[in-house]
Amino acid sequence: MTRDTAPFDMAIVGAGLVGATLALALGQKGHRVALLDGGDLQATWQADTIDARVSAITPASQQLLTHLGVWSGIVQRRLGPYDRMAVWDGEGTGHIDFSALEVGREVLGHIIENNVVRDALLDALLECDSVTLMPEARVTRLSDAEQGTRYLTLEDGRTLESCLVIGADGAGSRIRALSGLGHREYATGQRAVVATVWHEYDHAATARQRFMSTGPLAFLPLGIDGRQKTSSIVWSADTEFADDLMAMSDEAFMRALEMDFEHCLGRIERVSRRHDFPLIQRHARRYVDDSVALVGDAAHNIHPLAGQGVNLGLMDVAVLAEELDRARRRGAPLGDLRILSCYARRRRGDNTVMLMAMDAFRIGFGISWPLMRVLRNQGLTTTGRWPWVRRLLIEQAMGQRSDLPQSMRPPSA
Image 1: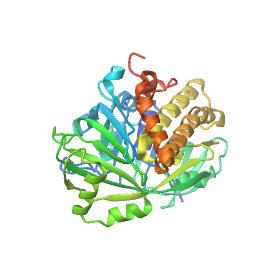
Image 2: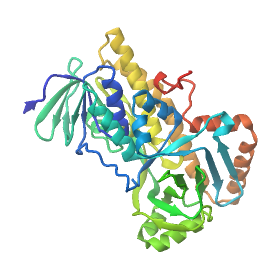
Image 3: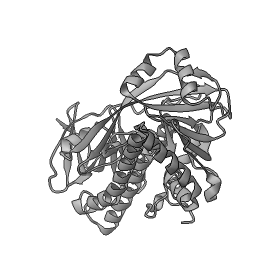
Image 4: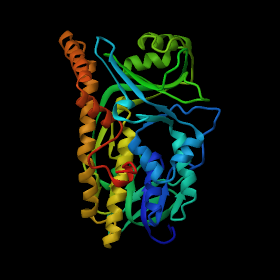
């Protein structure tokens, strides 16, 4: 068994968007960080291909990435700004739309390919001397906390010593399981079918979502070669219907997509390879323990219908980094449960509300009873008439909160 160098301040397991952002935020503060991932940590974005997995990045998340010096790398690659959102009930007349102009902003957010964000983060991490990248590193054992330290055993026999271990390793988190933090989960009975599509009409920088009894269908506008005729779709469908969608020929799938999206963007002219994955909501029973913490999907995994998953994870990052910076300035141990509990208290409530809201939307729009359709339609229509409610919903969609961490606030805040 080989011990790998001197002790780290933090060992972050998982180098996805959330884990990589956290490593950069902590490394830039001078913490000695190890970033472990089972993959090779190589750049993957190419200008002539489009990643099927995208994220809707809110202005609050954009501010965090700008604060870390990453946003310019994203802009140099590719992103799709959107300044309008439209949501409607496919089985009724309820409809609501929002514009960034209503709150005096230029955009509501950006649709960005995941590998664009990750590659921009990797560029920044390679310039950060405080961060050690550890590719193809798989954790097999996590020790109990011993005097403010935990030891990670890797598959290749190495061990790492760290004051704090952070699980950013996704919905099936190995760190969550090894630390005994536990979780609750339940299957939604749906699968997400994702793909890139090319359509006849311009998307007009508008994110659109149609709710149906079988699940919501979203068209997310991409910015490809300065044109507005490409979108990423997320079709959250009941499992049996999702299986049918995946089994269709491209031609049959495109025609089904046109019909179920009410021909809003005209004819679907081309579709990429489709991917699908089960939609399971999970929530960790505890986010923290002595010298261990969870962030992102390792702590909470939600339905993608509002596009908030990665933004909640980035909010975790900003809050945890802020609490750890306070601890360092006070000379407190980084793995102290009292410090980590401050992070957990600040984040658990917000994440719980979002989990419950997404579930309510999914279940509410999945019910086809006539009375429920009437209530949904009235609710959407009435909401659209109240300026203060509209503003509240827009601000939530943009990631605005009353207690935003400093790194996510606009420069003037």
